[in-house]
Image 1 (cartoon, rainbow, N blue to C red):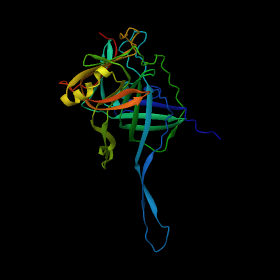
Image 2: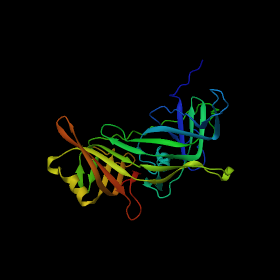
Image 3: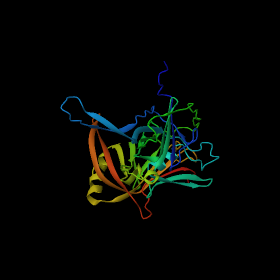
Image 4: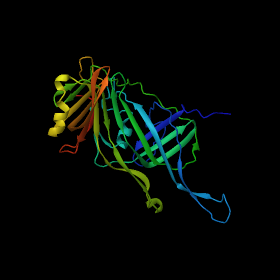
Length: 323
């Protein structure tokens, strides 16, 4: 008896309607992936004068899947020799609603898109291969918690090509040798020119994902689609008594500010080419906050709306070379 080994799972992602071909487009995950195809099965009654005559039917074309991805983000080029190298998480960001811009030899940037694209995925679970072609959409949380690596948490959903997997040889992708981008006390968070001292910063896409399933053969629809999203940011920090009224004043005045987060800096809080990550939001507005007690010290968690600027840019992520 050969038991299914869930640690032998490998995920391959690609934006667009072309399946990734293993071992290309591998994305490292911190949790084993479990695939449970949700086949559309409907119960119905068969009234005949007898008991226990209910039955069911299945629409085998309507097989959906939903699985979690937790990815620890790494630098794109620690050796600073190929600073336009696309990071491993690039395809995931594109599926989550970001456009990718490569500046040759310089950097790679990601900005919230106005034209979301669907994604394709291949999951191989201990030799059992599942394929999802051009139907995948996802939410995203970018978690920056002090003492931990920058982390992308996503819930990918879409239609599976065939609920019955293909038996294949388990692929052996090469694991990245780039270092993790660990959030440290040297990293900087600046809001409207003021340096904050948070222990956690989170960015969420909060997408609206529609489900399209129609007749029409190859011209029919069988996919998810991101129809809108509402970017937010959540920052937690200990309350400085001198700034106690800052957030309520910002809510009252409905003022916008610029937010900048520098991750994986050097000890002097400077960005390092090929190692660091710079996150910029041109227009954030304080919407709500909650105060709690932690060891007799006030702690505040603030939620900000992240709005588009005149170029429709709201959230920018940059790796590679920094000016």
